[in-house]
Length: 211
Image 1 (cartoon, rainbow, N blue to C red):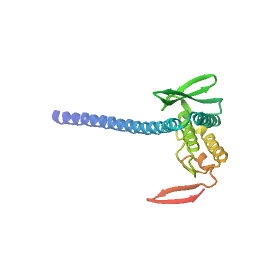
Image 2 (cartoon, rainbow, N blue to C red; image 1 turned 180 degrees about the vertical axis):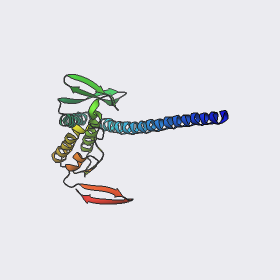
Image 3 (tube, helix red, strand yellow; image 1 turned 90 degrees about the vertical axis):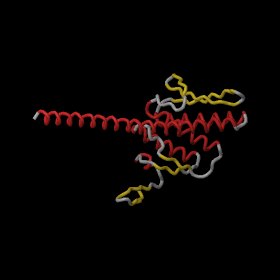
Image 4 (cartoon, rainbow, N blue to C red; image 1 turned 135 degrees about the vertical axis):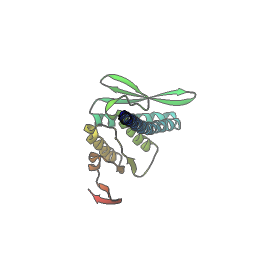
């Protein structure tokens, strides 16, 4: 009887250890997935900032100042429209090692903060909106023609500001006469399109419908 009880106790303890290790494994997997998502977002943010640096380095001083003004205008407009605050985005250009290097500053309610990409400390998806606006600005200044293809823009912006992101994109499209092809799961963004197409999948088959 004693051996039987001890065997049951040992099995119970072994089961608890296994369950604990499974829990630890699942937690580590979740942390790994989260870390990979943050890494991908960081790489995307850095790519947009790098595009600005390259653009500024390849232009003359006069063209650089013109580009600086337009970048500031587009990003400031995006932030003000989306968040409804008196934002001001500023690009400060300094020459280091004979190359122009841009620093990014954000002013809100009288407080200036330097943005060092990727900047995740600011709430409400400010870094997302800055990244989106920089991408749009670089597209205009680089002379890119044709429609813009955007994938899941503003994904990290709070839901309360999602309609404002949609409004900004609509205004941008009209102001610059630029067609935007947008892939999104956000209903607010889908609703701004002149044409919206929904894609669902059932039993491994994709179904397309006009919204």
